[in-house]
Image (cartoon, rainbow, N blue to C red; front, side):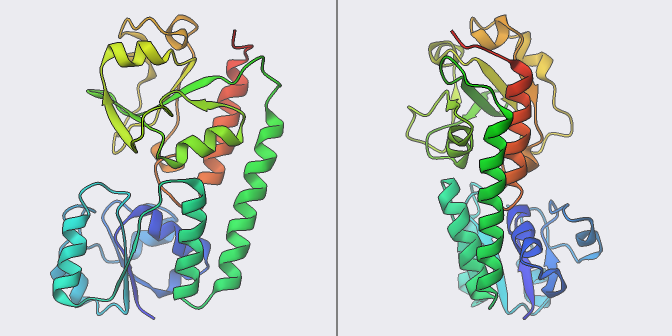
Length: 257
């Protein structure tokens, strides 16, 4: 079966299932595992060249609506009659189900269950890296600096933090993500800010400290960088993202009064 992946997360799901040899093309942003560097590119995720996709003669194209705006690409796949599967997770459970869905579609369901179980075990072990807090720390995961955009309730980030005994500082917002005003950030009073800017070549936590926000994270200088690859891609590497979050939170200490 010839596969084309249009997002980093889908490429990494295929890798986790041991099916890299079936990939015949990927989007421009897919960068893991290193072996994908040799594959033909079909363009950035929101500007996929459907002529290139079609020329690769795929049996299945994997798209994802976790990338805002990919609806237009999916519509093009439909119009051209290109076989495709669209993933759209909003939670950690949704990510697990997507991995299983892809595994079933590719005839490796048992391998899919193994991947999910390994992720769950790794996430469970990460909690042991952390102390018992007086209260759960409120964590802001920032997807973009200007305007400030953070993960809301309907994001797998919420469950990643909860698995560690922490809280998404914006879990009260019924959205995947949202541009935030300084007043909204101050009202949430995050204890920790994790900078995970999507598509940024360089993460600069110091910019958060310079904003002059009256929040515990700034007062205590609990602002950290964590690559978007471990937080923003709904695939198997989220388990490593939970581990990295655990180490960041452990370095911040607490207690959180």
